[in-house]
Length: 83
Image (tube, rainbow, N blue to C red; front, side):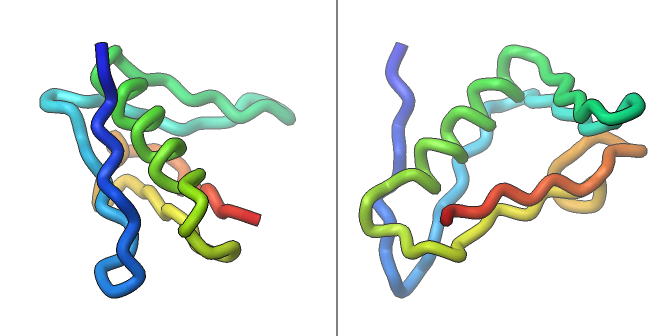
């Protein structure tokens, strides 16, 4: 299996690739963060992390996911930032 990572472009920023029928939920239990995802959701997250890890992506760039644009209802926000 190959994961297609869109090349970073300073003018267009990150281009996130989502697998069809993905499902991702973020929750907490005491001091733990729980990321629950189906196969497609895990592949999508892997793509996003590899996308963010590209050499040309500047520090401070982040991906912000929430229940209104990409996560399941009732999910907590997830922010992943390159440092």
